[in-house]
Length: 238
Image 1: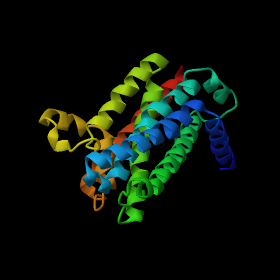
Image 2 (image 1 turned 135 degrees about the vertical axis):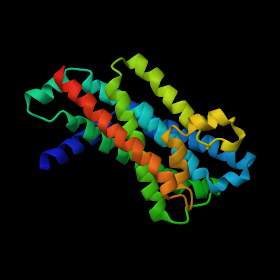
Image 3 (image 1 turned 180 degrees about the horizontal axis):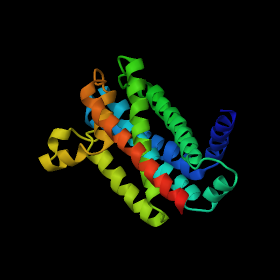
Image 4 (image 1 turned 120 degrees about the vertical axis):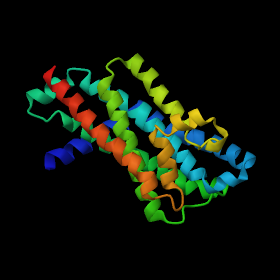
């Protein structure tokens, strides 16, 4: 246990020095929040009730799909995994420590959004903070699990960037955070339901923490754990 905690602490220190993680988990999401928060609430005042959830979906999606996978490639696409094997360190340790570290960073960024939204944009706070943060934790975990699949399955950095954008952009555009989902054609709405952002957004809304919004996220997480296990096994045999 002490070795695991040391690994998490070490990964946290490495992430604090990572410009990529700083940009994807803090700088870009918070700049987007500061710019678009005012635009959204001015054009559509009714968005004050969902601004926090909308900005969080964007922040989590960027951190999970664009921030985490490159870090995984640096570890599992290089000789670092051989160092793990040579020292008897389980191959999954790097994945778990990066997962936990990124989770903490995203929670911090989301907490900043929750604190600033009522002050800057007169946004409404969640009615039940316990349910809201539980829903937020679930959404971050599921999104990161999908990001782990991207980082373990794609070995080329350029290809990863393209694929990550193909997951990130629909998550933002088809989740209902930019405009009401009812304005989309039926086939685009159906595509949007594939992405965790669609369900995570609804899970974080007031009275949204229900089995109806939770079951799909649980299914995605379980599938992601299985896929990551298979990919790690392949990594160990290479």
